[in-house]
Image (cartoon, one colour):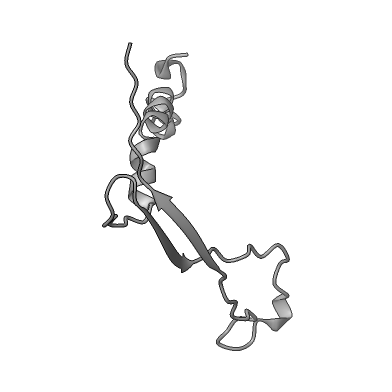
Length: 98
């Protein structure tokens, strides 16, 4: 449906190009991941393995806060500690030919 078929008062608020934007966003997800991922230097060479330790993710809060507890500077929230996660990373080289 063309935008000209809508009343003139609604035409400025209709989002143009929504379908092409949806496809464009899907195609750029790899770049989005790169922007939110933590970069890390890998000092080892091919075939070597490194083990790294970092702060893990917080456990999600699934219960809502009590509105009556929202009285102090902490707004009824209590601090939480994160877990430690450890991972092993190695770079290997693969090849195949015909």
